[in-house]
Amino acid sequence: MEFRKNDMVTLEIEDCGTDGEGIGKADGFTVFVKDAVIGDRVRAKIIKAKKHYGYGKLMEILRPSPYRVEPKCPIARQCGGCQLQALSYEKQLAFKEKKVRGNLERIGGFSALPMEPIIGMEEPYHYRNKAQFPVGKDKEGRIITGFYAGRTHTIIENRDCALGVPQNKEVLDRVLSYMEENRAEPYDEKTGKGLVRHILIRYGFFTGELMVCLIVNGKKLPKEEALVEKLREIPGMTSITLNVNEKKNNVILGEELRILWGQGYITDKIGDISYEISPLSFYQVNPIQTQKLYAKALEYADLKGGENVWDLYCGIGTISLFLAQKAGFVRGVEIVPQAIEDAKRNAARNGIENVEFFVGKAEEVLPREYEEHGVYADVIVVDPPRKGCDEKLLETILRMQPKRVVYVSCDSATLARDLKYLCGMGYELKRVCAVDQFGMTVHVETVVRLQRKHT
Ligand code: SAH
Image (cartoon, rainbow, N blue to C red; front, side, top):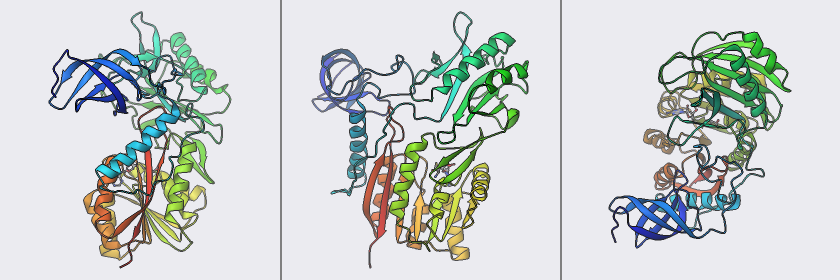
């Protein structure tokens, strides 16, 4: 059946879309309804209709979902950061597991999936070690900070995000009072005037070290010593820096970094490995779940000690160093040169010598090393961005014939596509496990183990 704008429909909400909107069906017609939750029975008014789907406005909750909970954060609905706070955490996990399963079955064509139970968080709030708060002014001209509302650059005021660490509030209170007292103006995106663009805060969960970096449209701030004076007293403070970004664009960080106080980085640990983290480096935002994710990847790699391992899309080498503790030799490949510099420094810092890192595209470096230098692999680990692996890389993996492939994925749809390809060509899907790294949001990580079939 087809629907038109302004039609009223009754829906059972059964699923959840990429922005957290509830999804229900009326006579085969799919409707996306903002603020409806899995398990709700609702009445919605169609506000936009396409042939097979449309968008509805929530008019009435006829029967609230048994999985509805009170969001912890009072501005959860306006803020663009979280999508699932109104759904119980248990149900969030069930939704994520179902999403992974659904993609593997539908896109990957798998059945009887060897799926382990999803690994959830013990504390699904306050898990993020990093926050980037934009700074601006409200209508009355007061300096404010918080998060952007979904799909806009309007700042929703909030100094105490429920996903972040409690230290954020103290830091923000002090930076904003420094700005008021010393006329350090917030940056205005429209005019390109003003100084302070963002406040970046990072906290080492295992070391208690705290870092603040002000991203500034200019090289200097007025009375920098007053800012340092306020911030250095906060327990754990290790690094206060200024990052210069004078470009008129949406990229948060510039390239130039100046230390105002302390060192230019904090340290933190994942398992036994310690990392130096500068404001510019990539680092996993949920260190507790990352440790569980890597432990699963290590289990799936099933290393006995002498193996040759490739870690493709290795970032700052976190998985590589984790695996190197158990493998013969690990080679990491990553496209961002600074990340590879971090990887090398972190290897040295931990005295790990059985690793080598390459800058370049995985789909270029691996075929080159295979063809020109005859390298081989017992195990290949991949952890690509959302778009998944390049087909050229998958072809090379098939030619190299490693015993096992461990695929870590942040998008189960592209994962399913890539697995379908590999499993059509001699590999078998042995294990699948979803790991929740991002509670209250719709995102989920998946790790799988493929084994070469005996021929
Ligand atoms: N394994 C790392 C990072 C994974 S994120 C960790 O766990 O921390 C994915 C990484 O792939 C990013 O660092 C990104 O810069 C890198 N990347 C993106 N496209 C790439 C390509 N074609 N070849 C190699 N690396 C790539």
